[in-house]
Image (cartoon, rainbow, N blue to C red; front, side, top):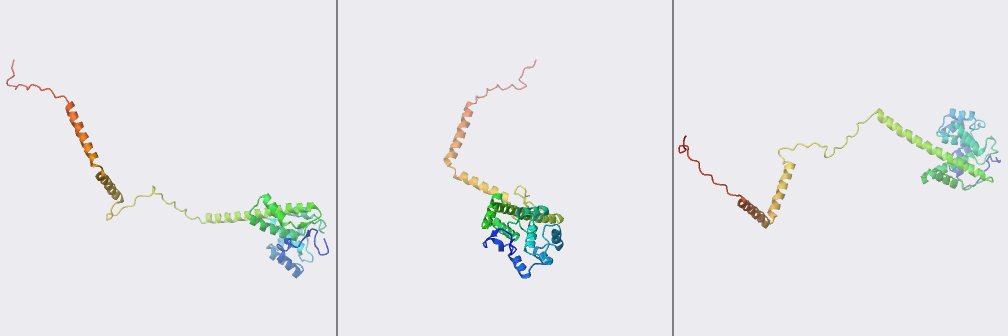
Length: 277
């Protein structure tokens, strides 16, 4: 750590160190450190929660009850990840990046800068709409492109940590969306609404009664059909009709000629002429 309190990791002015932490940094510069109530107001966390994190060693003890940049940035990072990652694992993740020493001698990046990187990476990842590992790593690499450190492993650690953090934030967002949708469904279960009636198909519909004063549609169809048939008969070639009649007559005459005449039976004699025995 240098005289200005900055941790190692030479970050140029173009790196978004001022984007994610800008407003809070202004407050810190104006006040010389935030009180517990001010940190609670900024982060939305209960004061007891922050004190518990300090007690467990996940956040450094404030100096004279004043929370400085190193404290607030760590609180913000924990708050961003806590819904998806266990608090103990977040502490290990930060140790992976900046070591376990309280004096920052092993740190490779300021935690306020790391938080700003996270904010910028989340914004770019949202624009790219690509949450695959390759897509997230490409965004992270673009965000930390101006980061420099003599040790090449430092850049690798920061890239891995940021990729994990982005996935955790995405999971948190999905979890909250899921819980919100589940809440809507639970409300609908408490106050059920009648199911929408399925519109009847034409085959399902019952025939509507037709007033006597109005003509029946089906009867009108029959009339129209008859008109069509009669019109077709009128338009039919008259020679075709005559041919059918002639053919029918010839068939009738042929049938008469084929029939053999019945044999004539002699008339029976009256009963009074018959001989009696």
